[in-house]
Image (cartoon, rainbow, N blue to C red; front, side, top):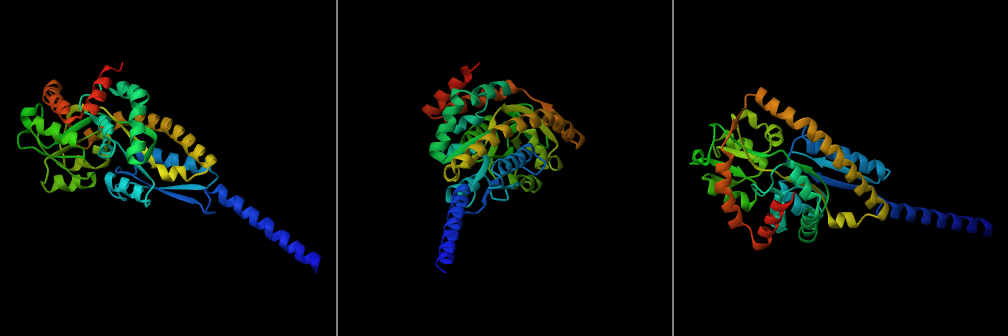
Length: 330
């Protein structure tokens, strides 16, 4: 009898230790870690396709310990809502760019008009000292850690009448994201900008609340704007990038092996996103044309002349210093 009791006790101890080890491997709670990632594009967009690959890689590299569920089309709310949810612990990841300036002022430079010459210039900045400086502030002030980034096609203005110069913007009501710099620069150009979530843009144009908006061609397509807008005016006023970010607390709650796996998956997702970008942007322009949109060449120098003084006036001393440093990057 004593031997049987001892056997039972020893078995219980082994089971307890095994369970503890399993808990530790799964972030300490013994359950699969489930993360929610929210973004504004649709399921066919480069961001979503890359996020799916990232989620699969994370799941594989953590042996199923971390599962990432992706919510496209702002189904977790707009960027600002999702960031607030991450900080509150009800979401975990977001795809966001210049909107982050509402927490981290240096993030305004992710999409400052006429700060970048082309996408090669963007890549040099984001992967260099300035990019690290911006990431550090996002991490400290917004409570989010950038995992990987997407370069973006240039932002262009859409409309139902061709717009070739700032003179054509008189009385033109347009949507801009929640970025003060965009409000200031488009006002300086002569438009009437208003902040609106991207998921409200289609209906806003359809109902005549706004006359147009500005975005890269991939979002013009994924938002179905070819159904309600006729022209893509090649202002190319912004070359930029956007981050995939996770909450600091969510990342720090992982054990070392899980955290390394997430960062390794992010590095691989970066390459996947770059390949998709190269393949798809030119194709998207063709599809927009096939769907009835017309691309209009504009007087970019005229837009530059009216926007740059507004950019310089709108930026704080810290932001303006960063802006000027970006201009000097080769």
